Length: 250
View (cartoon, helix red, strand yellow):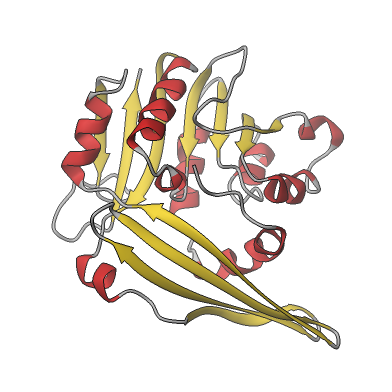
């Protein structure tokens, strides 16, 4: 599994994604969390973009992530008691003694699972950690074939101040691997800290999925009840859909 974000990625994560990602997915997951009575787990908790709001709203929520850099950022936002709810674990083999009523893996977490073996292991591990009737929700994007083929070439999705007098710029380059259904993404960060200038590159492959592939994958897991929506308003899939929002029930 990929996704162990480096320190500089985690450092600027909140700043960048506040601008480039709207609140639609957050609102969707927060609504699902609010409607859940019982324990909740967020897989890929990151810097707490969703998690901290859920906690403030009184959710009995726990979080895991595979990136130490992300864990370091989120735990700085939490009280000592709340820190105990966060752990460094992987969706493939995480372990808890108690089970959950809702498990969510927002914002493309599942796309970091490159191999079929990891995808199946993740689904089955999540299933084993749900109570009977519990729900697992995750999202992946619907592949845009034209964009997939053309890709991005040094596309800047953020350029601004991260603190007075200091700026950060992020550019993205993508290259498709059509045979293996992977988008190879290179993130480049350029920033200054007073008179010092830095640049770093981080490469991350993302696995993209098609509808019937997702259906076959879920149907071959321990789950046998699921729905796939076309957006975060839970509309049916159609030709205009940009998202696969998958809800699986135990």
